Image 1 (cartoon, rainbow, N blue to C red):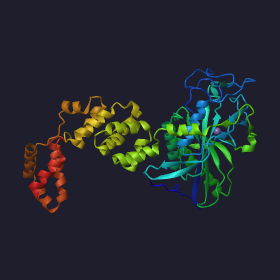
Image 2 (image 1 turned 90 degrees about the vertical axis):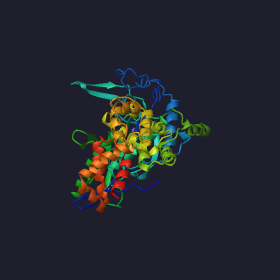
Image 3 (image 1 turned 135 degrees about the vertical axis):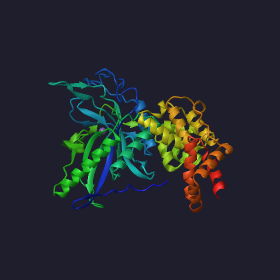
Image 4 (image 1 turned 90 degrees about the horizontal axis):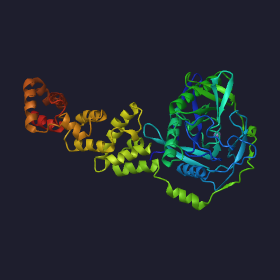
Length: 488
Ligand code: MN
């Protein structure tokens, strides 16, 4: 498997080339029914403050109790990121004031996170790949939400999200362009979804990225970075990085220096704005949370979890390539979502796997994307893709007609067989019928027939004409055979 370092895509400034350096902190909400330290429910769409326990509201004297399920999900995620699982980890208080953080601190993990170093193999769009180092994954609480647009004079606070379990996944500064950053988030999301530790729903904010951007002259020391908070789509991640890198380059080329700060991306204006100067760790006055004991895991339990993991995207990709002869690219497209790979494997049973893969990745995924549908909700089931490929394999229809059949299947006209029968799309392989069409064409176009003897590629014109005459139903191989026999 190709495994290069990140590829630098230099930006040409007024005074020479610049390199972007990117590191990401992904906040992934643990797919848990209850919060990290309380029994309150977690869910989208509940009324304001309906999912708040006394612990989440930070009533005096309340004690946090760790949620075992969330710990297990963090371990699963860590294993999926090929990372070190720390059998002892600790919770710390990270002190800061937010109106929607009634505790006045966030329970997080600072010095001793539950997951240490790991690595993620990331695929680029062209099928090549590179490795991003994982520095750590730690568990922490989410804050609540301030709502500013209900009343012109007041801010409302909804604590439903307060105390929800997050996994913060910190990468090394291993990415060198915006596409690589987006591809990295895509891959981490894919792994977390396979494992079930996070649903990856970016629209709901269940997976979001803080993007650390700095620029430097190629090969120079790391520059000062700015952190763009809470970016929640691949497109925004790319746009935010593109803008921010150019902003920093302009400042440096004008002789200025970069202030380390936290910035916000405005998708409407496609720009980043300063939010606050960046705190250093000591500003938070981290200290061990006296209400929580160190988290101690048993090695055997971790091992049991490791054995229970499903086949992950990298392994599945390698298997699809070797078992079905798929290209690196097609296998990559299929495995990014477990459901896609499942669909493909169902459809490929006993069929030409490459054809099944083509129809799935090109025609079907294209249509699903246009319709904003997931493959789980595909109007065409895997059996019908298998049926379509069977009709092609057995020469009942040509690949060209298959496109028509697919469109009709998509339009809800039924199984491929039913569509072919109803619309009379069976391929003409009857040599006699094809011969009479061809002979008529040759007689009508003697000059073109003569040209083929000089230039064999000119045969294509006749093939096209036969297809036209037969409304695309002629078997192309048979047409070619007859034409060659007649014109040689
Ligand atoms: Mn965090």
